[in-house]
Length: 473
Image (cartoon, rainbow, N blue to C red):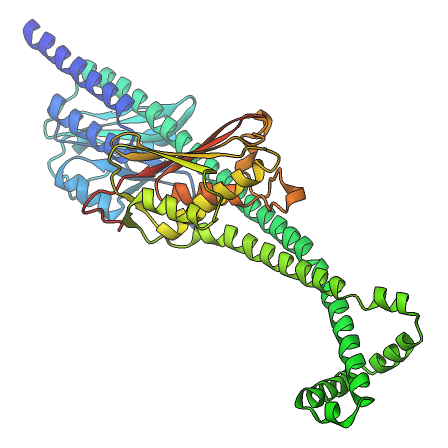
């Protein structure tokens, strides 16, 4: 008998230890609960075990329920699938244990007044329901059932209650973690929407600033061209017949007539100009001013298109393909038509094919070379050094280094932020480097920078190596 008790105690300790290990190692709550009921039945030799969790939300009749979350065997599986539940405080040992916060133990269910005869567990003769406590709150109950009468010893009850207490803490912690993760997701979601709204507002602001000069330039250009055309028409109409009858003469006169109909003030304006002295006329009818306005229109339009491309380009679906990275880099740099000797290359060993979208990656290279050229504006001997080598088994590494002005340390983390630019006076949009970052991350690569003011900057690209059979290509 002593040996049997010692053996039983060892079994209980082993079962408790295994459940404790699972509580600390199994993160999936469904797996943990299923594992616990399995261990209880296997180690204790009981017929059935199940875990109910309280649902504090009352139904239409004001009743609250305990829902089965894990059950042993085929019966347990079926009940979980069917959403089996027992009323808290109703005619069941589980409901009573949760309501009262006390263990309910029946060594003979046939004489138990508060007991639910489950048709899927017809062989039950003994049952205990142990409340799952967290501090002063009951969150559920553990039910253990046996085919034998008087099946539970004092040691069984105390060890199972200890196990139930541990399980309750684990369940509560899991719920807190779930709530924390949900709250964190909501924070991230809110911050994401705020970022999108901010970026959208900043985009509209930038586009508005770049578009602002266009209407005035268009108005001045239209006015100047109208004057030139009207004056030309007036001169032709007062010239000899041969010029008036020339097709070009006809065309100018007809065009001026249409303009006069559309802009009635134009002929009067030209009449006033005729009375101006020659010096004043030269100021008012200046072809160079027209060219300047056209340049402003072109520059503003190009900047808007660049903003659009930097914003939308990286978000386009990339068309991956195995590519010769050395050729892609050199071809894109060649498009700048830079003076001989300004760019030098170092290619270390055999470079494997990489997995890129050549067009998107080409924009990254172009952006970095453009930045390097602008950084070297005041450099008497500008030079760009491009080094390509295999970094490891997964990446090819590309360094693009310049000997320009460098980037202040305080700016190094800001350069990746949308609309942050240190080149506002040179027409920078603050979108190029964020677009490079987005493109590199989309292809599974990386981009980083090191820089020293007065020495220069080095941008480093890690480009993923192509693997035959890659499903993403």
